[in-house]
Image (cartoon, rainbow, N blue to C red; front, side, top):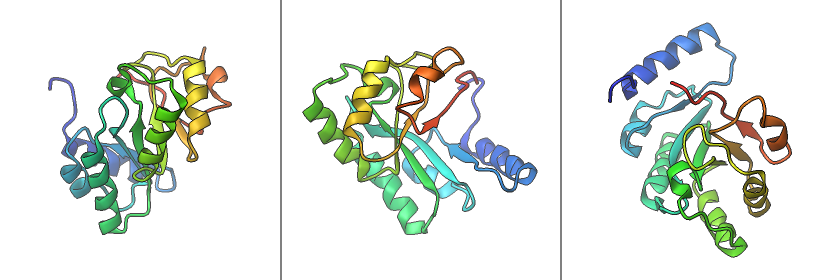
Length: 167
């Protein structure tokens, strides 16, 4: 994986950021297995972002492993998990009953449901975001395709943003 940090490098970056900004909210995302994610998750991280989740591919086992792992550790941070997120947006279901059922499932595992456009740096349509927000009871995060020209349109529907998809 040329140009990408491995999970141990991510932890080193996290600890450097924590030393520089001891009071800041700092989250972490490992593109790794749930087992490795839980093993490497710093105790003082404020949030964990995971791409695993619910959508076209229902990654229930991975989502459950993340939730069970943070619970076993008694970790106090916020867990952000995928809900019709990036590659999980294939064949997006606009049917409210399906979206609501998927939201109920995702809310078992995640504190914040994280969605996106269809891929990295691809904007989500506002009507799709509005529909997703209407079926969730938990906060909603938008984690791709956010930029200075579209953020205003998303503000009414999103509680958390991730900006800056370029690594």
